[in-house]
Image 1: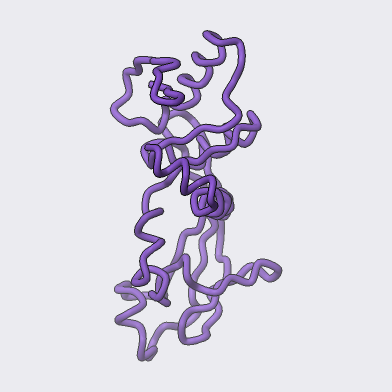
Image 2: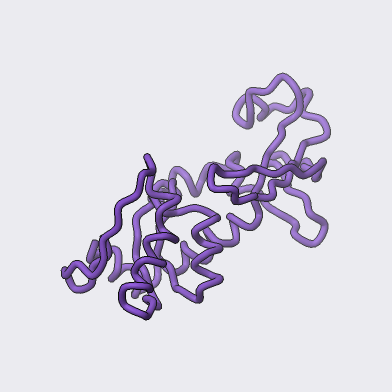
Length: 178
């Protein structure tokens, strides 16, 4: 359902087990029913996906849409964990990450992931050159080979934008109204 000031403004039914793939058709139904579209939407993490962020961006809708791990990322333990991919230094110009011991994790390839709805995400793969003998290895990863990471830069861009929106005064207000 869509609501505004606690009044239901639109409802839709979907034969999908999760919320993620229902947002666009729900918004399209709203637009057909009211002949206009919301400029701002607020939704929970069930709708937080690269596909939905791209759709909202293409429609010019400001989306206060949380994503999985948003609340976890706000915690001190998450922010201080130097081994999480999100916390590693990234050199965008030369396209490499730096592990906690200072080793560069260079890009070794790309792959794609396709959702059930057909949306294709581009994933970059990074790998450390030599983790043998690293004193931090047991804290960093459990692989028998060198550390490998898969990174979706476009999703990370959207998450940064959403994080800024959600932690802004307006975002805090919207979240308090849910």
